[in-house]
Amino acid sequence: MSVNQQALYEARLELVNFLIDAFADVPSEAFVETILSEDVLLPDEGAGEKLDGGFATLEAFIEANRDREVDAVRDDLEREFTRLFVGPRPPILPHETYYREDTDFRGAGLATVEASYGAAGWSPPEEYPEENDYVAVELAFLRYLIRQQRAGYEETVGYQRVFHEEHLSEWIPAFADDVRETADERFYEAVASILEGYVAFEEEIAMSMA
Image 1: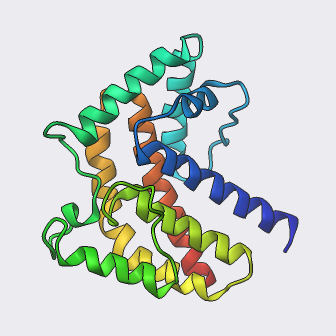
Image 2: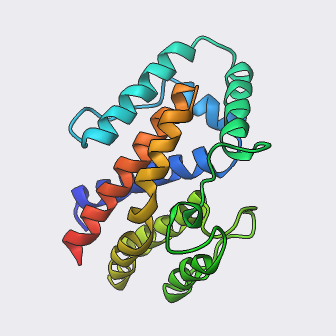
């Protein structure tokens, strides 16, 4: 594997890890501290419209909050995460089956998602409290496929391509739109755009490698 290929895998995994942490649960103190630290290096423009816009919004959020106490920023993000995704009566449900028109929420479509996991030999970690069509769970599956590709298992490229075609690309754009329209905190506006751009970027990679 060339140095450039290794760097690309590292960048892909760094992004998906960030997105999993952002959507899996209310943000931890360590997560917020990392975001606000001087060590965070955001990429230059040229990654695509959604990614560029998301990174620019994230940079604005960091600059506006860098001098605040980490606990205070975390409390703000915890309240916003809870309002958006937990409720009571959250305005957004980050589940594939909620956004699809060909299945009921948490209905038969959930088994279809799980079948994609099983075909690739992956099971969701038990620490994820949500159903298996939750956005962070689907991203964890994507992370697994990328790690397998890096290890030389080329067949996982096909699994990734199909997962984009049949799942991620069917609902992530609409979900990201809802987050951008509903969020009061710029952080969640940013991660919505980064998510949408990242999923499109990964689909391009999977299509080019298939």
